[in-house]
Length: 245
Image 1: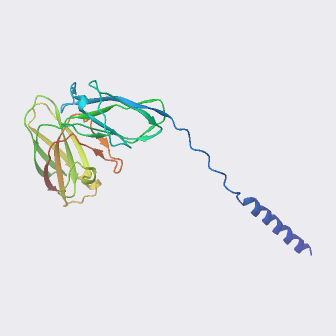
Image 2 (image 1 turned 90 degrees about the horizontal axis):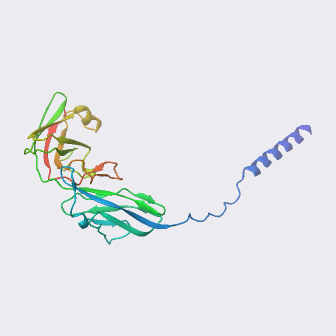
Image 3 (image 1 turned 45 degrees about the vertical axis):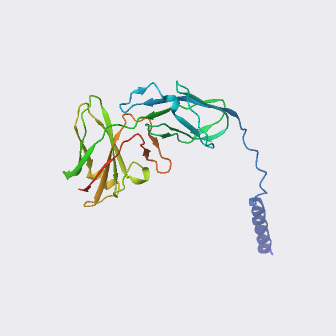
């Protein structure tokens, strides 16, 4: 009898804990946070291939904000404004003839006045030639150009197919390098270890695309899908291949 009473008591305790563990019905979802209205504004700046600010023509830049297809132009000082903007996430694209288009990453706007400055760099007017070689644990890119009294820039994209280019999906690695003033030859060394880290193996064929590039590229931005940089202020590429050391 005593064992029977203990068993009944134990079952009662288990039932009590089980009933306590049950969750009640979910309460109603609260209302969404408040939505405000304000403005997004800033200044657009243009830069030449040497990274020097251009003081004219900025009013021809086309700006488009996400959620619309219409564009606006800044005034001749570069100032622009989007008014009556509701709380949310936005993206602004900017383009102009002769300049590399740029795209802001999505940014949050809450209320009031939000400042967003934008820069565009000119597409370079100079060109390059390229030959490749290997040795000593690295590939050598021998790049030739015409002399210029100003510092310039180039950018190298590395891929595993002949279609390597400046599009994020088409390259595995990228390297930007300054061209010294008055230089006519610029060597770029790509180490075997860097290629191994990108998934290449010794003896693989690797493709290089070398572009003329604007110094201190203001048009460059991060591609959200890949995390790679997008370089639009670049000139026509020279492409060659080599063997991974």
